[in-house]
Image 1 (cartoon, one colour):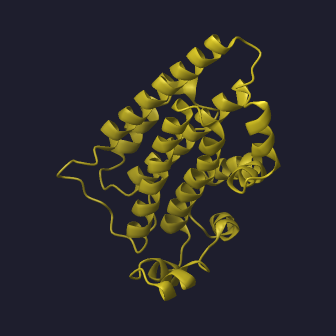
Image 2 (spheres, one colour; image 1 turned 180 degrees about the vertical axis):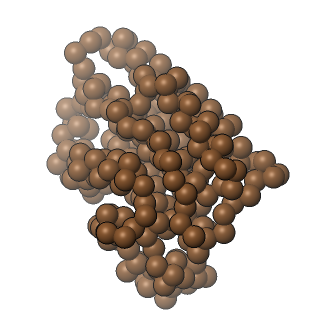
Length: 235
């Protein structure tokens, strides 16, 4: 990986960032307490789709850290797009999806259902739906999703599709600052996904408060994003 410091120092810096990121993931998992027998999830028309999308985003986030640790930054960066889009789908399912959208995504998996579901709320559709007047998605969430999209959409598309950027990075080296940026952005998306799940838990906002309390402790591995979401899921 190309950088302005020695290779050993760069590897040590990445290792520290990954170790701290793993600690953040563990802290969020403990805070969400998904194995709590008393866990009560709010029953909305989009709950099942949202929880699946959020879980998928968290899976991608965990996988990204593993890929970075293996020294595969190009693949890790492509994974960032999947992580972000899964989180976006979770937010859309909670705040903006229609009943017809959700029904299309809850069908039994068949060739026909898959073909129809591919037409439901692609990336741009979900962004527009969340920004639409009358959507009760919290402004802080919509703004943060918009910032990530604006900064990363085109470059992440390049990595997903084997475009110019990953070709050059693979042949010429992956810069250390970009490695750190990808890890930090992934951590931010993970906190957003965790917050979305907390919205769906009927616990009077206790999990959300505890998630927000983690941010100062892990500010060293997060970009300038916040998971503060003082709101309730729509009914």
